[in-house]
Image (cartoon, rainbow, N blue to C red; front, side, top):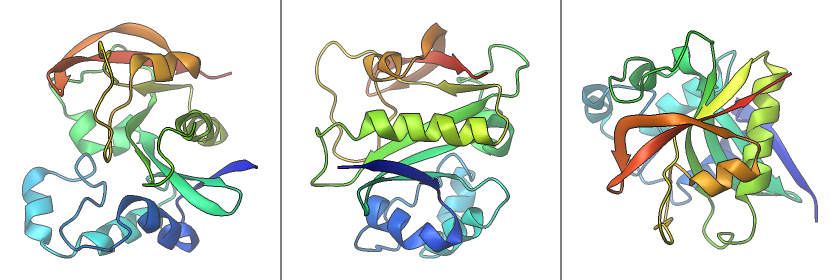
Length: 190
């Protein structure tokens, strides 16, 4: 059993889609909510897949796909905070300083692979990707639930999950997810 993670480049788009939208539903989530404004997403209608394909062609693809052996099992939406418009302009998830961090926006584990330890290699792969692109640090904005979170699809992650990956809490934000305040967590990179 071997884990490996790769940027979501155009040649890996089908694997990415298999994780986030296996039935290729036009109006299903294509992980664009932080990459585009709400009106822009609404205006797309059924053209969301095309937009995500275009993002995969950028110098910094919009995230990474994690594989267990040769099967795509996880997706992490990560990139420079400045390239994630809804995060860069957020009044609720404000930056804590001027460091040009990369941000983890969303994690998705493919159905049939949940609760099998995918998020650890997924986060590590995302951090390694950011480090390979010169990121000084990676931030995430998870929640700290008292019990189990509903993780039926995409989610922001939990404090414990990111602590296991070497992130530390810097504070809280004004945003909430599932009624819980979101934290600011960071992992500095060498």
